[in-house]
Length: 460
Image (cartoon, rainbow, N blue to C red; front, side, top):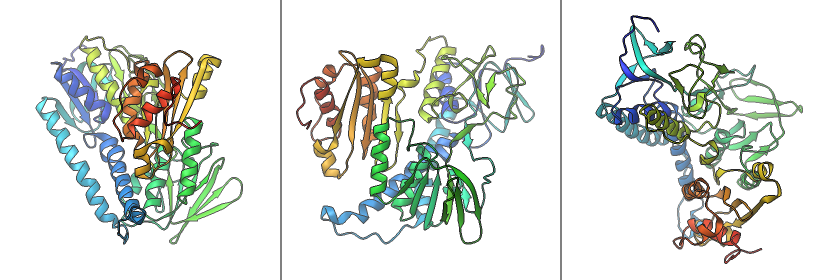
């Protein structure tokens, strides 16, 4: 840092997404002076192009399916089609209300919000336009962006999730390249909206980071919904014209569609921001940080998608709060990666927390036991007309290490699952809790009852 540089803030945060704004708000709450730099919109990808708008789309898709299937519940309703501009208006209304609320929070906390593209000049300085922000601490939270594959250029009928949010009509045929979270969520939306959908995944199964049982259940449900799933299928090339896009796979087969959605993951936004020049260690663009989010440069922290690990908004959010409290001297407990809940908001939903069965066996060998509870025995799930399961992974005479769930609205159950895993609860301890009837939450209670050796609504 230049000798003449004067500290302007206790904390300078570069990036106003989930991790950045959480850090800024918590630091300000703790009495620290904070500058928050954002080149786009406060709230970042999650609020404007990711979590919130896509989940609004998924809710619209759920409503469409409810109307389409109303007859089986004795309700006379007809689905006349999808008015995509109207869906967009609804979606953007949700985003707008949350955006205004977030802007208000930043203003009330007296955060120095700086609009513009910031660049790290040295270990303490972020430059935005002609302004130099010098902090006792700098937090890097620049997020991620949609990736594509070598030789696959986005444009026209080939687009990422960002482009898909700008569609004004529902495509008749969609090929989704990538069977991870983003890919299966958009596949679910397009199918609910009436598109013919094919998911192409190079790995052996969809949502490969989840327990294999969850992947199998999702693939089975997708095929039942009429979604074509092609796993172990590698992309070769794609061409487009005014009428269609043709996708060629390495096995020589071709898929013709109106839209190719590229959902092959997201990469860190770090290039050209001065990180490496300032001495921050990186690997393939990711900022390397320890469990306390400390980078290789003293005084510089990093949170969120630019740090290797789960690319989840709530991970960045939790890390941002952690860093603010750590800087303030509260000595908080680091965010534990395996205890972070994960939800894929497709139909059906996939939710999990903790270790998969294989991860548990790799760590503990034969001292692992599992139990699968079918939602077929859960009254609320039968009312909703959903299928799926709750799978528990636990140590023999020890705590539950992982919870894996598939079914409608299972994302709403992952909160209790997180407490079970995070607090290292034993099955018998959870079984002693009373779960309200009739709720899907009972499925967690029943699974733990069975694992504790006293199954009731469980069919072995």
